[in-house]
Length: 358
Image (tube, rainbow, N blue to C red; front, side, top):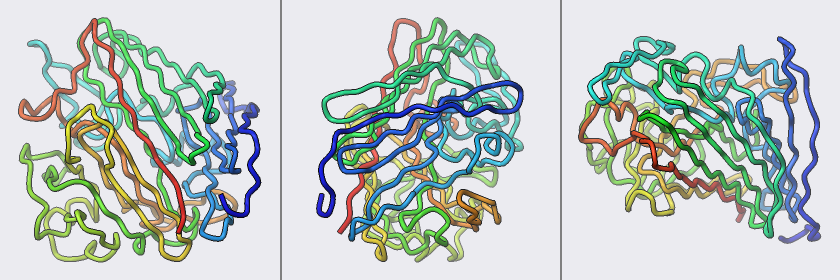
């Protein structure tokens, strides 16, 4: 990379005490170009991610807080690993193999992101890892049967890898001893100008998605797969995120902006590009690759003057999320891709956030 001497990738480890006597580990990953990611085993949270602009100047491009104790009470899932089930399950109920299961209602009237104490609020077992092309963190979590109402004992492993190709690669694995819905995701809020540098409405977005899953007024999918053509949801060619966000549209009204799942073109299980984002003033670009079938675009519509890192205030639409996932509420929709992990099977997913500048 221009302007940067190549160096060896490295990993450093510190700890931070939290209320309640918990102690979390923080891993600082630095690749050969000086790109740096800080990850904690509390919630698997990506605390910061410093990437260069077109002039080689580094900025942290993910929203978050200065201390871990702010995350349990203030965070709208900043940077967290989400599970057991990312996104919403209607009214906190689903039926599986003839039995009805009840989940916590934490986003009335629905269950959101795994319930009141999801993966984002757990201390994961963790260790640093090194590999030929970078450094990373291996995270593991045991979720017992009945955790947040979900069936089966579940073992989850997630690896974060910061590569020397300026990629943040996230790989997920899981097994269960009883059938259970499983749909993990990563929930960073990105601002390629730099966290706390205003809104993201000028970012240019392209999605490899010709369909989306429209929702009802509670943001639960109707079950239809709808073409985006001719709608404000058509990002098959590049558009500024804010270009159509305030037009009169029932779906935008329901989400108070974009908070919708898009159907990624191509075959589920095959790694392919899902999104490309450019920020014109900095030149920073981000490509998202995934093996998942869906990707949720959320534009920070409910952020409201949050006190973030480095004394900065995060305003409405100060970050966007691109959450790779199965479809929301899939356990309640037979026509949606199957999101049930069964005994004897291993869940696998790969998502990559790749950074560059022009």
